[in-house]
Image 1 (cartoon, one colour):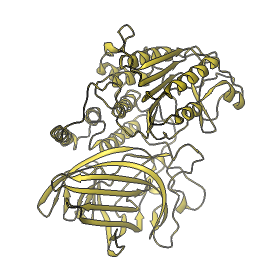
Image 2 (image 1 turned 90 degrees about the vertical axis):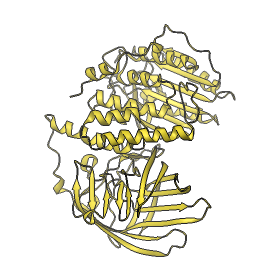
Image 3 (image 1 turned 120 degrees about the horizontal axis):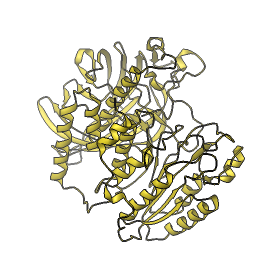
Image 4 (image 1 turned 60 degrees about the vertical axis):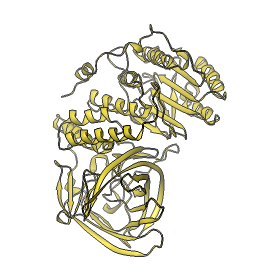
Length: 559
């Protein structure tokens, strides 16, 4: 079993750059940071936030940020610091803005509040009056255009007001990042974070380590932080991020320039070689090692899903005090088709600040049947009807076969074979979780009738959209990808409309143009009928009504 102590020991000591005794780099006026750490609370003091803030301020100072740091700040001090800081970042020469807070946080009516050390609350109204509304800070940032904002909160400790008042919901609420920004939280929405047993909180301890690595994109660093914290806490704490960054951001750029074509090819080959080494593994350490080396790798979403399944099995093997999980056989069959009611697949949310975060939630079973209509995206002319039936599911091998092997995918539905089209590895079309702003790459080698070519895509979840196809009307996440066939010089476009818990995209469009700009492929696939034996129940929550309408997938339970 991976314990926090053993796991942290394997990571080694923090680098010397993180100590306050080292000199800071000369300040760059384009980089501004505000760091606040509150420990000395009246009702529920914390051990590490002041230490965390000092260490983060030191790290950012070494990275050239102009840092304003405040420790054990009262409400008047926090508000004054925020007002001065937001006025400073409006200056035209400011480009990158960082805000870090460690201490207590709370949520109320979908809004997040940061607690000063003199915060007192015996009611919801007192909470609003004595704490700092994070929306205020985000709103002030929004008044400055053409800048990049990073907000990091290690602020989900439990029971912030002692016995005087307890908010109805734990932790912080989900908030989707505005354009040009990234929000990083120490743990997932509605959960609480560890204050740590050492000099730093568990989240910040790993944050310091990963952000100090030269030449690392901040999004890659945060993915490593999430992995490390999850493993160190045995799944009790899983950090999360929401991003709408439009450019790569580096805390230490290390003089890093854009990779040459040869360097990109070398990195792809290294990625594929590492995947080849671990793809048949059943070991947590192998998949964790891949994600540390390639946090945004061409197989990272697939590896993350496999790792999650392994960790769930570890959790199941432990003694449970709670009731046994519901029997999968008791879950209703999903039947979709013209004239049939469409179940609710995503838990409705009243949160006005987020479109939600959901697991992909796929669970193939033998006997599942899918019927799709293929047509031309340019003319709308129907080409044919396609029907496929699941004939084999091998969870150990991460393999799903349809029509006795004519079609092969992994357990996420990523294609391995489609008739005469074969891939050397599952194509990372789908992410492990669905959240607007999420990005990931995909690369592969495809063989069609003996001819092999290499391609790559960059995927992003761009929006939620309600669409109508022959099978009905669905609330979907839209995944958009742009890519390139490196062998033939073709430009590629791939768009998918995905519903959590459904094993196929309800709509998919694939367009390819050759190096002269002429259309080569213009395919559209739409769901007509479906009979699916079950949904992934790990995040299922029943709704009232008939069995056909209680297949909802809960928001914010992705991992």
